[in-house]
Image 1 (cartoon, rainbow, N blue to C red):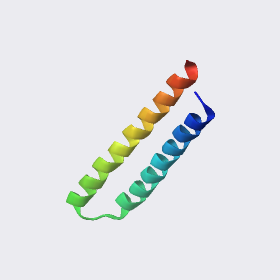
Image 2: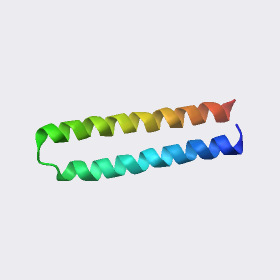
Image 3: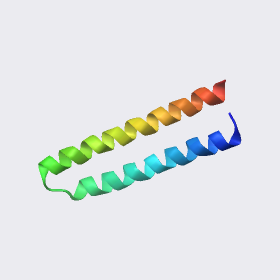
Length: 63
């Protein structure tokens, strides 16, 4: 893996982590159950994306 690729993965993981934190913070303040459900789904999506990126990074580093 090149340094540029490694930096890309690190940036992408960091961006997902920021989105997760923002989503969690917003979720705590939402009273509308329908909207909270939608936000929870989005949180789940970003968590899965972050996990996939981290797994790909591990795979690439072990090659």
